[in-house]
Image 1 (cartoon, rainbow, N blue to C red):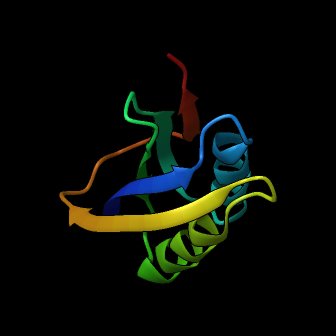
Image 2: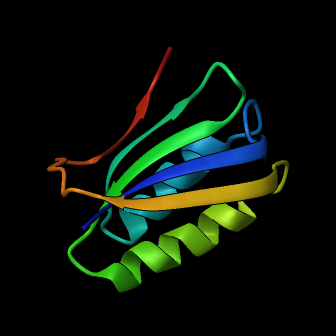
Image 3: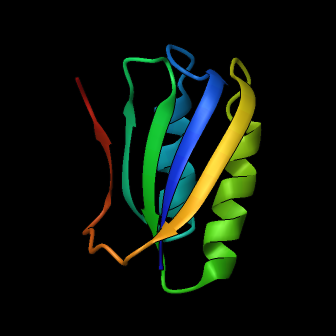
Length: 90
């Protein structure tokens, strides 16, 4: 199962992508995360079990200490195959 996730708030320049990568790897979630030009963060997250994805989304709603998460939008999309959870740099 794969989720497309958009996060808004103070989520750039506060360690959000590193936080998400660490949590994804702990939950054995694969995918990617990147900053968007409109100051949101975009995530693709894949896992065999929806429980792991739900746990990941719950962590994304909290974020690292310096972040302020306003909204987290999730959408189930057709499955994508990823090898790891990577940070996509500009």
